[in-house]
Image 1 (cartoon, rainbow, N blue to C red):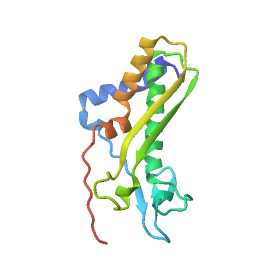
Image 2 (cartoon, rainbow, N blue to C red):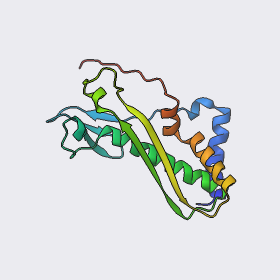
Image 3 (tube, rainbow, N blue to C red):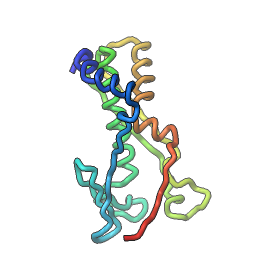
Length: 169
């Protein structure tokens, strides 16, 4: 896809969202099924079914997806798609590359071994390695716009409020 095609695709959406801001609000959802054996949750996003379970550092076998890995995978996917869209819009020469996310977890917090240890990632590093001949200032612009427009990056970085509710069947 080239910049002209991308802009033509997005122009009517942008126009609509300017005149009708409510039309831009979309609720995405994932559902998990808690029935079944073991400590696992079958997650259905509407596009795939993934069975998540305990990480080996918390007693899991490693045969099921780890939710921490899934968070990093979502970040890589979103950042990669966003970077490619921004590169396309900027007519940025990109012949390939990789996106990698790494996160540091202290499982003492998750397991309740140390109440002072954090539950969750202490730090996340997102690294892009690009095959490009573009000058440094264009790479910096691509980086800045990718961070600005990546939904998952902004959600994590902005510490979006979250509410958890338990109901009974």
